[in-house]
Image 1 (spheres, rainbow, N blue to C red):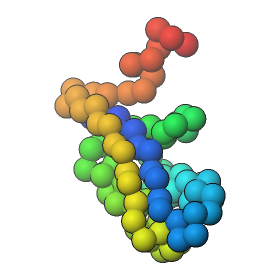
Image 2: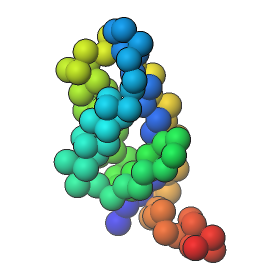
Image 3: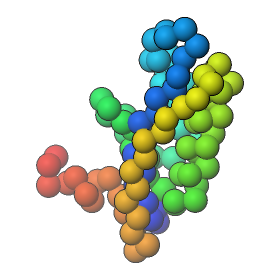
Image 4: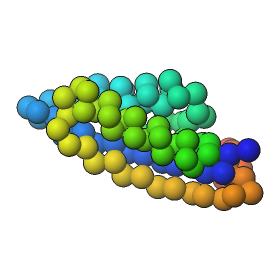
Length: 96
């Protein structure tokens, strides 16, 4: 069972001020490749899994931004940690 929800908004600094959307798409691709459960929202992406696993995904996202030429990255991260179990559906079911 998952113990965490982690939301991330990644903001890469681009060399010439170009559009960051292709970078964000690449960051989301890293999440997809990790096979963790996730949902993309307009301003952030939320992942569900074990905290240690999700932190590794965040590290890989940042590394991908560097590979694409970003010289620095801001990663705004929110963590919901509940050792007995955490799920996106449980937290939002009354709104669906």
